Length: 392
Image (cartoon, rainbow, N blue to C red; front, side, top):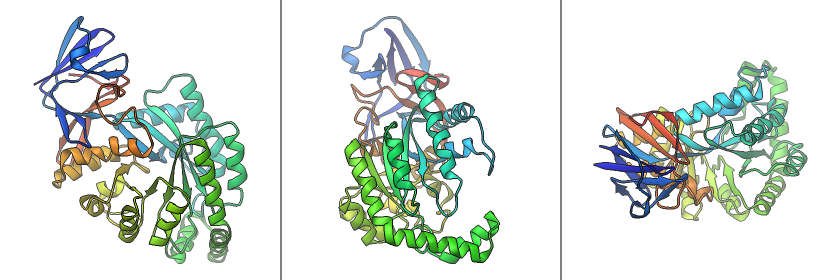
């Protein structure tokens, strides 16, 4: 089996490899050509100098697309109250995602504070600056984008968002409602005890915080969600809702024009979303661990039932390909599993130029070895250039 690559008039061959060129269609090939950063048809590629490599029987797939990662936040503040230089954080984060086979990363910055992370407002400016400056100076290997996750329980969120949008064009937006008593934190007392244990609050103060978040959600959550949706529509970018719990949450998501539902926390919500035509995404860590970190619905069961369009890394950059490996190890069709992290998320984000290895698409792809339910990334190419590992 021979795989052929063409880069800057140099035709490169990878022998003994398996190429998944179209995960959605389950289309495989033993040849792949690219030139000037894009996949080209083999019959039309120029033939110049040649160099051959052995693929070792490994799997080659389109570059992984991650629509939601919180990992940069942790790089910028590795411990509570500890600020890290933005450039250092961004370069480390870029290494993390490239090493995980992620060639397109939507870095999620919280616009507004939540009950568990009040420091997030202070992270907005260094976060945005870290991404934008590194992109402008072309020091990154992955294609890094911005995802604004807008917390509707924060009274300062609307004005903060609107001030940001005067100078920053995000690539995706999502609507967060972390008020306790619903969605991700369905037991108010759980949040109270968490704040006592992790934040050093008194129980009374924690309950007062919880009451404030609940009131903001009930009185202002819908209006602020509509505001975010209007901005997303005006910008022409994808909009997601977050942690939908009930069919009513799904109905609201559809009413405001959401494009997909991130991390539904119950089977009922996931079923209602898919039945209404709203695609769902789940967290890859849920698959790798075999359970949700918050006691929510098992992502694997939803995937095996065809209720999930894409897997997102959420808080562990390497989780997407490990999740793919585990799903394949459990019997899911190989192409279907890969689709969850390639053309599935590409379609949701309206990225028509990637996610598949067909002529005209970006030459973003990954060389993998899948063994025992885990994935080893052996090489990564972005726009036709090797950026990680060796092709042999």
